[in-house]
Image (cartoon, rainbow, N blue to C red; front, top):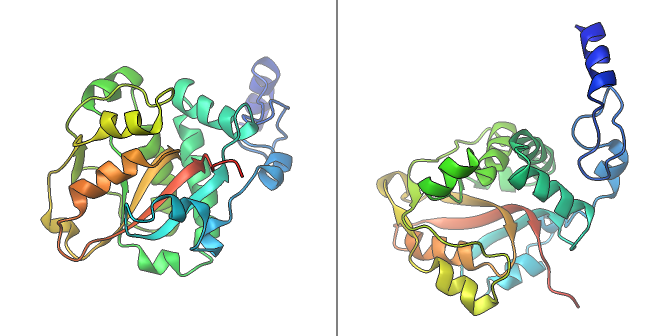
Length: 231
């Protein structure tokens, strides 16, 4: 098998999805240099972080978490592009596993009851073939040993892309789009809502408005990246 893998590497050389340099045998998806130097948020070490503050007065978050900080045209954007548009769903799962290893060192692991990825509309899911947030959530759930729930929460309405919308337009685009299918299973649960990237937080706020009337529910969020406001 090793000889076969070596031969395939010569024909189809593996490269780092962040910097495009070749990968060594012991490296997967992301080279060790990028693993060490990608802009991590470390928000799991500080609850008064910028992501949590983004939702102040909007969503009563217990924890606002993201693995990386997004920079336009940076390496994190390359990772997100590969995940979302180049069928690299396993990369999302790999990153989820990496982040979970850091979260497991905190009390957050013991607080979370269930992990729910932000769902795609069925039409979008059929077009893309997978939900990138779900694959990131899979990595988190497996490494944290938490249940992954992809059935209780659904996107009832299709929305257009958020990328070029202004803040108020993003909110109008997602208002009322989510629906709870199985409310009872979330009663008194601490839910970790998972998205691929958070910018204005409009999608998470819309999700909270669908969940907020469930008895005793608590909400935290986690994403691969967060586009922090420029200072």
